[in-house]
Length: 133
Image (cartoon, rainbow, N blue to C red):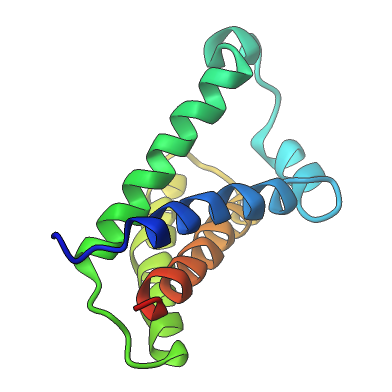
């Protein structure tokens, strides 16, 4: 545990915010995501202040990056690091979303957007954390 690269963990967690800002923007999937997620009555009241939403989200991103760094061995190369990230992002996170979305009767488009985000998020985690010695 003492061998974890905290700077790499912080950079990886920060990268998920940059990715999310682009991924969920109107330039990429934001409009489709809003349409597929459906209307939400009282969403602003339920979510709270944007600072709280972003702050708590960053804590979850740090937690995910920390646990990824703790579980994944250091990669010997960028392709191995990328493969580790893709395996976690697609095989664990996106697949778990898939299970939940089936029971919630969510659309395949929404699954592809959200699952795709986490696939790319963990690909980046793999490259940043797995290959940063």
